[in-house]
Length: 118
Length: 116
Image: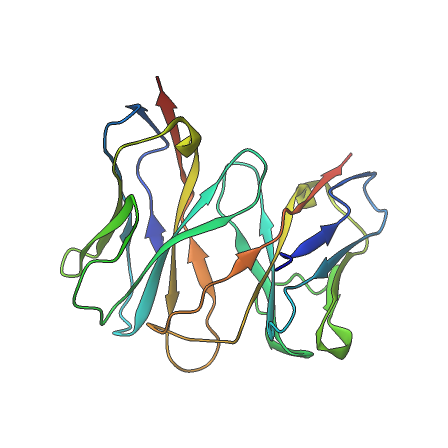
């Protein structure tokens, strides 16, 4: 079974430029997550999709970040314009379904995209 | 307040010995799940073990076990018989709530180095 795919693996841009990341989840996984992981910290959830609908985007800086999941499969995360503090690894994950609280629901992570903003 | 606290920035252990990585959590929700992930230098997060708040037994997965002490709100990861390949960052995470969204919260991680 293929894992979560992400591209590009690395990206270097100047501040105020735009950048987009792509994620292809595991086939059949309804739920897709985007995380931001700043160096030295744990991942922080940016947005969560169930099929092609947004479940939670409360931690997404909507003035510059946007994400979509057309057709409920692939997803793109965009930053426009980028700031220095956006330098981080952007992780995509997928799971079969949403499960809350004590319900088991394993997330499978992709390799991440390392973004450097100069 | 931090929802997940990992107080050990770095840990060293000798190969074949056991090591415990600490994790404490903060929630008032009776329904929650606790996870441990491993992140090697390649960057991918690898799921290790899961404990639900209503689970009576401590979770075990091969060489990994979770020492779940609900009253103390701790969920320490125990790795038995450490191997060189266990060297990585380890993250504790929690997901709360049965209603609404289920935002998982991660700790800052513990760097584990296994030396021969």
